[in-house]
Amino acid sequence: MSIIQEFREFAVKGNMMDMAIGVIIGGAFGKIIDSLVKDIIMPLISVITGGGVDFTQKFIVLGANPNNLTALDALQKAGVNVLTYGNFITILLNFLILAWVVFLMVKMINKLRKPEEVAAAATPEDVTLLREIRDELKRRPQ
Image (tube, rainbow, N blue to C red; front, side):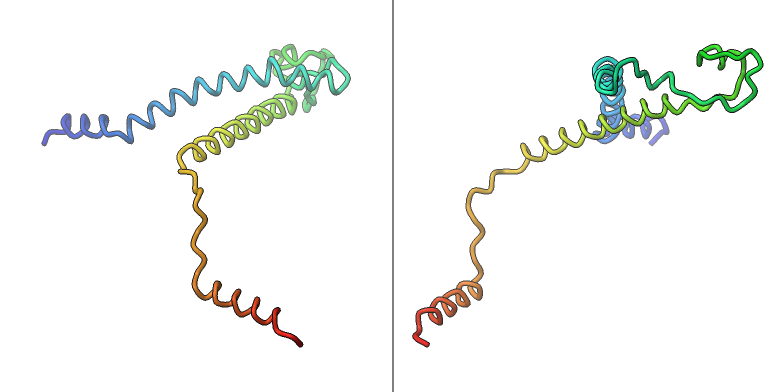
C-alpha cells in the first residue's frame, strides 16, 4: 500500500471528517458568540453598570508615558507597556457564554438521545420482602 493510499484512507475516515466539520462549525459558532457578547450582552452590562462602560478600553499603563497619552490605541502605537485587563474580561465573558451555550446544547442533545424511561425499575425481591415485614410489624399490637 502506497503512502498516498494510506493518507487517503486516513483522511476519509469518519472521525477525521467529523473533526473537520466540528472545527469549521466551531469557528463559525465562535463568531456568533463574539457578536452576541459584543453587540448584545456588553451593551446591556454597560446600561446595568451605569452606562458608558466599555471593558475593552479598561487598561493600566505599566511603563513610562512621556506624552501623557490616554487612549489605548495611542498608547499601544507609541510602544508604551499597557496591561489591557478589559480585553481579558471581554474574552472571559465570551468563553463563559460559549461554555454555557455548549453545555445547554449538549444537555438538549443528550435528552433527545435518551429514550424516555417510562417504566419504573423493578423493585428487588429483598426490598419487597423487607417492606412486607415492616408493614406486618406495624399491624401487630404492641
